Length: 532
Figure (spheres, helix red, strand yellow):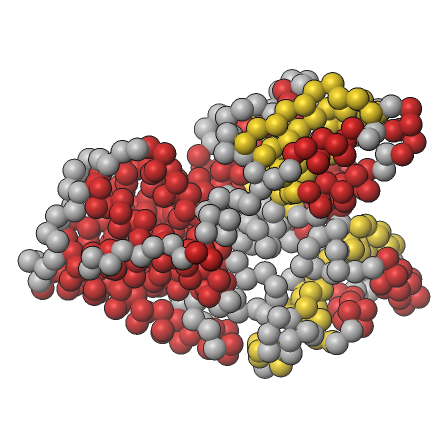
């Protein structure tokens, strides 16, 4: 192929997306740390699927429109660091072709080269041995090939690009010691190679089709079908029966993205579910409805009754935070967060999720607390596309850091003073997590066996044990020193009340510190621990 039109570009992009979707679980499994949260393949799949979905919605086969729509779709759908970097690659691709109605092999080469440059610019401290290395080395080599073979076809260019991308991916363990030790290649780079290979298959006349197991439920659109909202006035009997935590647990069994706001005898509820009738029936047990709204999840333009019921006057400040778990959501709201984005380690929110949260917080200056290193880039991307508000992304990488940042916030102070105090609080908290290993591996000389409980201090796995309570107590020993004053123990889904009581008793018996116990209901981590 010597020239590519819009229709062909669209079909090639779909082939790349399908190949990525089909291999996302394999890419997820490349996670270096043996924790049950490998999500790079899923994040990249959701990111690229959003771009393809937007192209299909546009109905256009004009090349500039397709490239621009893809760029915007990837930008807003970007999840996780690899998803954000992928969006930047194709943002650079679009910026290089602009209004071209067809692409020659040289045009395509230049666009991919510009994509690599754009990706590097998006990362403050680029790390080699990652997707960045793969895109840079492969586009450099393919550009060199084109300079020596100016008459080469698109198929020939893509052959070289794929070969060099695979070669670069295979070399990533030599650049990142942790990859070499664990026997993995970089997962983000593997995702990019899957996209490129899908492009090549299309150019060879063998476009990749999405496998049955990689269906819509698995790859592109979320499983949940209807946004179900209601405002409920508690009856006299309902007031006696209603228990917020129990109500949330029942909603959790029906769906996700749950919001429950209790205002006296008024309960405002949102849940995303495939069975909205069950959610409504649950609410009806406690009283009478003043409002009910059920909308398909895809119809994101419909206003939410929870936001439109009582318009809030513009405030000077707002706080948006990210967490997973009904207890953590309530805790952050108690700590003055205005909006909680559902997400975390196992499901990173997209740029658009954060943009929508910004739109719902009526404030001049908005602080965003990502609480996860893999969400920071999406938060910054959301800030970049927001023009009418002052967005400050504080780079909180853990839940304890996010909670600590909320405490010194003072709406009576100016922005710079708040930033300074919040950053200081972030720097003073130690963060620990307890989770379990899903595979046998060795990291930094430490042998880890499947089923072991691991103690993670900040970013490092510092201990393993076969018993959860033993691992938790040993991690606390590693975190507390003579300057420690407060320990926050947050119970997750996998820990029982008895486990929590035993660990709390151990802290009380061993250390002279104040203890704050919270039920976070977070997935993945049996305990999250903050020490200040």
